[in-house]
Image (cartoon, rainbow, N blue to C red):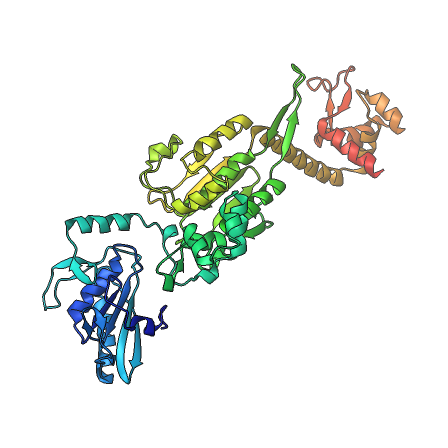
Length: 518
């Protein structure tokens, strides 16, 4: 693999051993192991270092031509270095690059700062050795870490969340200057003007979206999340899926739309889609006052905050998308994993989300600059405030004991739920009515057409031009009553001389349909 620095730059007459460079004339596995461990720990965040095997040193300077290694030894050492990597805890492997200088074979080990520090290594390679220690660089020397150094290493390990780590498979070329400048303009940063003349690597360092030595400056994960056109290349399933089930999840029909791209762009696009396709307003007039009440099926600011929180707090190491499910009477927003274990179950039930740990501090910083989130644990209070303002039911939070997922459920506003229920009932009634219309006889249809109020038997017979009372009773009035289309004004006295007949609610609906077809 190609080194990020040219070999000639490591072997000039001006080069001396220092914290990032060590020469070794021959193969000393224990010394190399300890120096690898020290470079991996990278106590001063210099970007690790280089070990050159096969080059002697004199007062810290390389002695050229090199001592060199035999071809046989070269191959054996490379295999042994791989084995040494597994002796370090957690295991760690440098980049190994063989070179030929002045006809001599040498090995260059590039040991970048590790992402899972602190690292420790066996004190010796003697058989049965069980003592491990942390090693660091002090000037040009590898030393065993003291108690204070160990404490500093622990602090370093505790303060490198995933979004703030460098990405080992990406370079600065994966960061888009256009996206960076657009962001700087959005947040009204002074860097926007300066960025036109500033060196790109310096701009990235200034924004803290890149780190490492100058010869191997790497993008941080947060930089790729916001300033790469397709972050899912580096973090699979970084997307928001909006799935709409207009007739419920059991129905055959549904629509699905996927949003990808830089986190803030992806988020803004998904929110715009939800606002235009889902949010509805209803105005309810009140008889006791001139002002009407305005309600939304879902308070959009609450939905917005919940989706922002999902983007902020999801794990970008987990290959699962954020999913928004739009159902007839609810919206759910789900992400992986769930809330931190420092938030207790009773806190979830009481809507108290005060975490002592944040999964993506840098993501939160960028979203805060864009005014998409406040980043101070105010998300849930804002959601509750907007829900109360709209008169909507409180949200329901779902997770499991292992906190593998988190789902927020927003029930629809009661006014819309009532409207939907009435509409559904009307549709059922209409469907039933149409079925009845298809089944009733022509005689019954004729009867329904002439009925406009309360009618006596004689009056109905006259309207229909019928003289035979028994035929009218059997072919017209009794089938209509049995079908629920006509009702008696005196149902307890069917033979009363005062008896009258009128259309039922179903009968009026069928009459309307019959008249419409007439």
